[in-house]
Image 1 (spheres, one colour):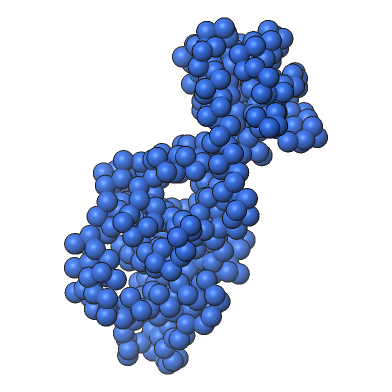
Image 2: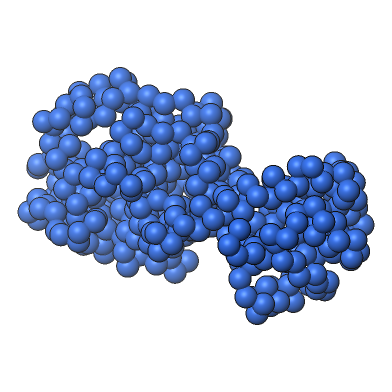
Length: 401
């Protein structure tokens, strides 16, 4: 090892430091400390320079206090692997430590034989994640597709944007589709995939999400994109902590070049705020119906009342038809959002694509929806304007009734 790794050890008993030094050899330099609270721990970690590992003693009597310390570190320094150490493997203590975000739990003078191998693996994983983050400079772009109410069109557009991004990207660029919208699992059905690892699993694993986890657990489509979706078999909308979801998207920005997220208004404004706050661009998807237009209006009102940043939000009108009355430009003015694109398609081809598990790109490549999605993605990436339909008057009096 050309340079020593640096480890911070939180323990009341110096025996842990002697044990770690003996078991891990001369490749790691240890610093022992007994900070009294989370703020002191963070201050010492940040002032002492770069650390590669944090070991934290967990015992039955101090588990809640130490869990709070670990949670604070993981929240502020998510790339720092935290390892729990203790005198015994009490089930409740181990569970408390793992829920707080530790990567592993080792028992004093019992796990000597596996300690070096496991710690070495953690350091390699952390190094891989850091290398990926450095190569991307944390500049992965998140594009959110938002519908006012649950509808398959939201996940359908997000799926095709993700496929178009994978099609457009370079070989070393990774694309991730995060389907957090309802109906649950729609994107996995559209892509004919049966994920064993879901979005809920990823949220629970946010503190250990790295390149290794992605390559081993995330579902990958033949088109080159990775997928996380809600479990298809779930009844009702699962609860997702908005802080963890926002933190997960932040981690993804260091591991993927493009992240497409599908959401709907029924997820609640806290979760939407977390996603929009991490998004480079947000697309509000609606159509020309009075119902969806009014629902979109109320969603925007709720988001604006909570000071959600909508300066990067734009309007996309799906399934556009001439002379229906609610024209895209009119809707854009009413929503106070710029109109980015209108999408049209052959309804039969769209249903066939949904049912067959094939994309519109493969099943109906000449359908105008395919060209529209590709131009929409190009606009998101390059900032170029997408041609939209001309403004005309229509059923506006009903919209504000």
